[in-house]
Image (cartoon, rainbow, N blue to C red; front, side, top):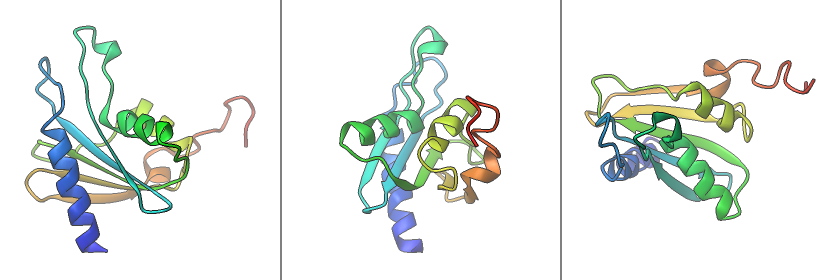
Length: 133
C-alpha cells in the first residue's frame, strides 16, 4: 500500500509542476483513484479573476467524470509548501458528493504526508442542504 501511495504522490508532484499559477505561484496537483484503481490527475489553473480559478481537486473530479467514473476511494493532493495543504471548502464539498468517507492523502514535494478521511475534514456534508440525510 505504501509503495502505491508513493507512486500516487510522485504522479501528483508531476502534475503540480504543470499547474498554471502565474498569480499565486501556488502549484497544486491531485490524483484521484476510483474503485477500479484507475487514476485521474488534475492541477490548479488560475485566472486573473481569482474566483474563476480551478482547483486541482475539482480538475481531477471533472476529468474522472468526463471519463465515465463516478465512485472514488482516494485522492492525493500535493503542494510545494513547507507543510501539506488541505483542500479548500469548495473542493471538500465537491469530493463529498462522491464519497464522504474518501481517503485523503495530503503531501508536499519534500516527503511529508498526512492522511485523513474526508469526513474528518468536512463533517455532515449534506446536513441541512435540500433536507438530505
